[in-house]
Amino acid sequence: MFSGGTYHEVERWLRNFITAHAKRVDPRLEVVFDHDDGREGTSYGVRLRLGHRLAPTLELGFREVADNRGTLAWCATLAEHVKRLAREFIADGAVADASPR
Image (cartoon, rainbow, N blue to C red):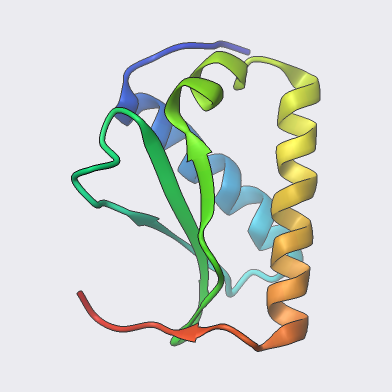
């Protein structure tokens, strides 16, 4: 595995990683990134979407992801966290409505 990278390279890796683990819970789940200009270079806001429903935002720091994406233990912990959030999201149904931006 590898660590480091630019903000956009790390985002692409993170999008693929979260998508892969969320879809193991339910293949209908989609991953949505918050592209607020204030985040660029510092953090990621990630939400799961199912139809018009959105899960709460998962906040991840850019440096944390960039430094740890090559660490098996960190990746395993993040994968379990994503799958737990996906299971809770599917079970709850208690999420905000998605609104077009």
